[in-house]
Image (cartoon, rainbow, N blue to C red; front, top):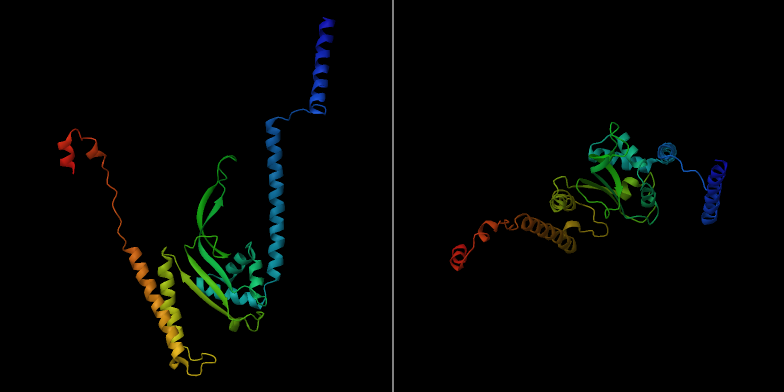
Length: 272
């Protein structure tokens, strides 16, 4: 019995030594799966708290940067989209593209600043479900800054355009920045653009009295040619939209019921 016990102990010792030689280190005990899961949950919770803490700090710093220029943008967005100013401010300081606003205000900065207000899929965890189950994606209205090239446009676009390369200040923001909106809630971008040009831009241009260096104003031939070109463009846009909407759509026909019964040439003739 003693020799068997000693022999078993030697095997255990040798297997440990062999593991050390193969791995280059002594064998470490394997933790139970439940312990690993609990550890990851704790780490995940700590990471989430740290991220929330950093997000609050970032929002506080951005809120401190809200000046007269930003308040002007916020008031125009709130009036145009029919939101309260607190909601707009919260959306702006929470946006990961917040730095685009400062780039827009800078001398020779961005020529445009775009905002989309539309349904966005928001991840909402189901607290009653198990942790390994997927979260639910629910559409929710959201106001966010965009470059206009990465997200699909399905709602309302609010935009700010610079009129010069001068630095935007609180005293000149209302003169140097133009505001406008394009509505695409119907899902038809061309229709939204057509309405914006025909009902807002063209009437504004035709009522414009001051044309800068052009003293004759609307009587000037170049101004008249310009307005004619804009009218023509809107007409072409309208025709294109109508052609797209009235396009011929061929109905898909299930021919299996005809083909499956074809047995001889006379059947083919009848089917034809």
